[in-house]
Image 1 (cartoon, rainbow, N blue to C red):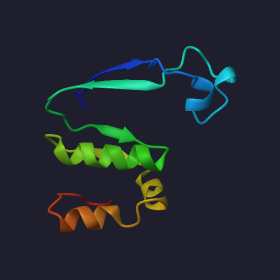
Image 2 (image 1 turned 60 degrees about the horizontal axis):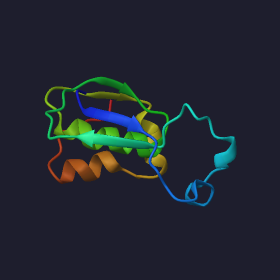
Image 3 (image 1 turned 180 degrees about the vertical axis):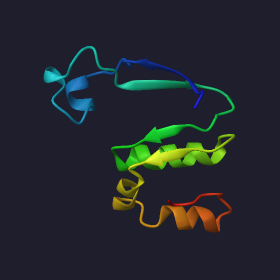
Image 4 (image 1 turned 60 degrees about the vertical axis):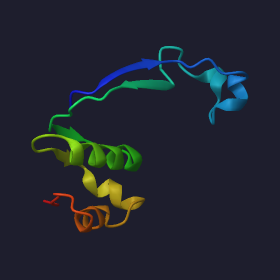
Length: 98
């Protein structure tokens, strides 16, 4: 979508306590933080989501993007955000479930 971002591992005191997973077993090649630089004009894209929070975030990003965005697997969003598409439409969002 054209966002400017950088993955990183934040420095936190006591990561074993801070994180909600077994930090000792985590893969050191995986990042736990994301820096987002902006403002940037986002562009529409063809996307797929496998997680409800990820899908809701993509939906909000798509509403601000120029052009059309298609999100595959969007039914996953309904698990935590019931009728999000209709609610966003009521607020003026140009959104259509297909």
